[in-house]
Image (cartoon, rainbow, N blue to C red):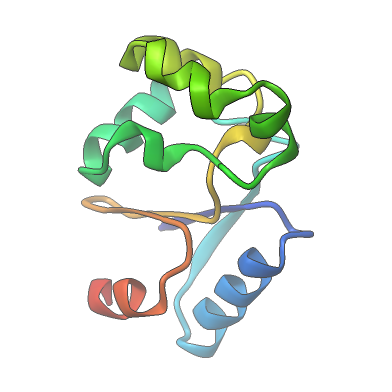
Length: 116
């Protein structure tokens, strides 16, 4: 079963959810604010995604900006970044779509179509 990890109030997440439903793709919904990803999950997803770790951060979020992460991340190791992401789901870019052999970060319709 595909995991759809989102923040329900996020308009991009709402569009992604509608896309999944319109394309009749079954998924398990998880609210990232109520059920924060663990360090282990984030590490696995990061490795499976093939993306640079900075792509996992919600750079438009208030927490990201208030912590000045644009500058602070430059000094941090991957391990430190993953630990920081595990402290608050609102730091994580969303939505996340996680399958057995893929992780999609953010909603890019073309990428999602290509996966299915």
